[in-house]
Amino acid sequence: MRQRAIPAVFARGGTSKGLLFHRADLPDRAHWDALFLAALGSPDRYGRQLNGMGGGLSSLSKVCVIAPASRADADVDYTFGQVLVERELVDFTPLCGNMSSTIGPFAVDEGLVPARGERARVRIHNTNTSKIIVATFPLEDGQAAVEGDLIIPGVEGTGAPVRLDFVDPGGAITGSLLPTGKVCESLPVPGHGSFEVSMIDASNACVFLRARDLGLSGTEMPAEIEADAALMRKLAAIRIAASLAMGVARSQEEAQRKSAVPFIGFVAEPAEARTLAGVRIDPAAADFVARVISNGQPHRALPLGVSMCLAVAARIEGSVVHGVARAARAHGMDLRISMPSGILTVAAEVRRDDARWHAVRGGFYRTQRRLFDGKLYVPAAALAR
Image (cartoon, rainbow, N blue to C red):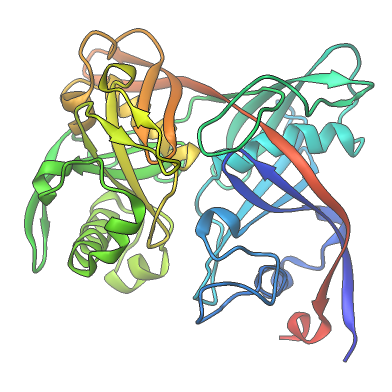
């Protein structure tokens, strides 16, 4: 049977890479999962996705669908899909902040949003979370600029800055910034005891705990974490317990299927560390340390939506993250998060009205680059499932 060709763009957004599609070029929604799995090369029991465009890591196995806006306060709609590497699953629950940096430039370059002058501003409606993201970026000859001086940790070279502002990011997945109503609480985890955690939903639903409660320093490298089978099992069990407590899933089976959210991360006070490139991180350059598990894999940097949630959590007094964050900066300046690829700076504005916390907005800078555009080929049989 012949293959089917579909127009697509392959792009890097922040520390992620993925495929971008016009909604009008795709088949009916019922065929999306099969198409995206075939396009990325999943499921792959070898974990490499050699038969598709994926790269064997959760950060390299992503799809984005862009369409004209379905609401008046946006310019385009953006639907994100996380394609699992080894499982036959496309998860449309989470938001990918890194790939969000490609959406505004795609919309301008593809003619979905007209832009003139030196700078563009694109309002993006993320359909996964029903939230608005505002992307602001420089233009060159009417197209999104690519060359620039911005360096982001984890990506070699420099690029043009894309400013992303997440408006009212609280409750993106569960409908509430604090899904359990508590800033910090003891979470019973069958077979592993109880852990003090903060369960926060800002841009993405997350559960955070202290590294020392896991017997860790917080500066462990991804390979070291992944090699510790007992630790990975414990983190998976905590994530499932949090999923049930937050209302993300209604049963343990459903929580296991929803492998993307809640994300689980552990945090620690600023400490000396090394990046994946071997560069020393000065403790004075960071406000706290974080490590995150994404779809069962230790992330090589930080998922951007999780970074937003970490920054919001650091602003909420009494949370696990607030407890390890450098006190002098926890209430004002942008937060500096030490992670495996370096230091990530995130802005977060949080307000407390009476006894209720509200995440007003958050923001950060990314770079992006279109790597390829043309026709993507998938086996026609994949769409006939």
